[in-house]
Amino acid sequence: DTNEGVIYNIIDRGLPEKGLKIAVGAEPTRSDRVALDFRTIEAMNDRFPRKVTLRFPPRDFFRAITKISKFLTQEPYDELEFKELAYFDVLFLDDTLRIQRNSEGNIFVNSRIK
Image (cartoon, rainbow, N blue to C red; front, side, top):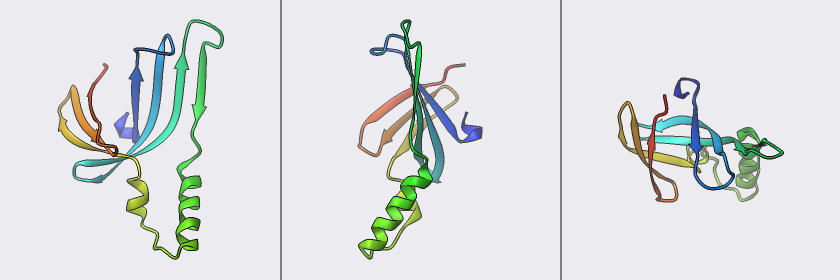
């Protein structure tokens, strides 16, 4: 729900049997860029365990590590640079479709599930 700053990506093909649900924090940082903060991955299937949830460490943990690293190397800390370690650029957006290029250069086409 983008009103809460969270995007849910549902991957329903491939392994595991029932797919994956990935929760990602989303924060606009530029007019066409959204910074990403990966939060959880849920893997579902018909066998035991039916659902496995993996939680990523909180962003504040990575922020602290980055600040320490920058301090030790005497480099300035840049909050925008930190937030944009993972991001996507919006190439097209309407009520049902989003086309984006991520920080690795990959292009994704996402449709809204209602």
